[in-house]
Length: 146
Image 1 (cartoon, one colour):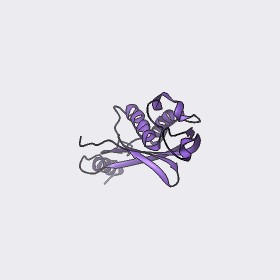
Image 2: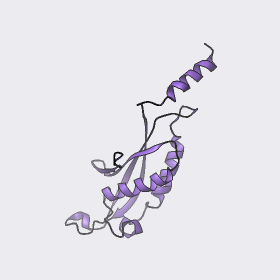
Image 3: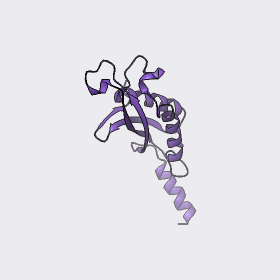
Image 4: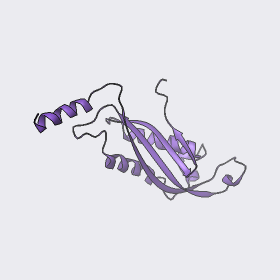
């Protein structure tokens, strides 16, 4: 078998639509302060975190390069979203005017922004996980069965 036919056969197998799914994961960081309104304890006071954001997207097929999505594109898109949050007081942002900038609400906010950025893309956003420390984080995903 010549190499061209072999590559075409591999592409055909990788591009097959069935129950297989590819998941891509990127992790990026930003720094921001926040305080939790109505919370009784230390987190009621203004404090900061070096937040870690994990973005997970999935695809059923790979493109002709064997990629679900270029990591560089996914990271650049996520960076645009995180740039609006970086080195800010999350409590003062319009996105959190009516809700606490908790890890839970932050994960939903980032999810919704990235989902808009991915509209029409070959990948689907699965989940956003926001870590406020190495041992505490919150994830947001949408119920696909609803």
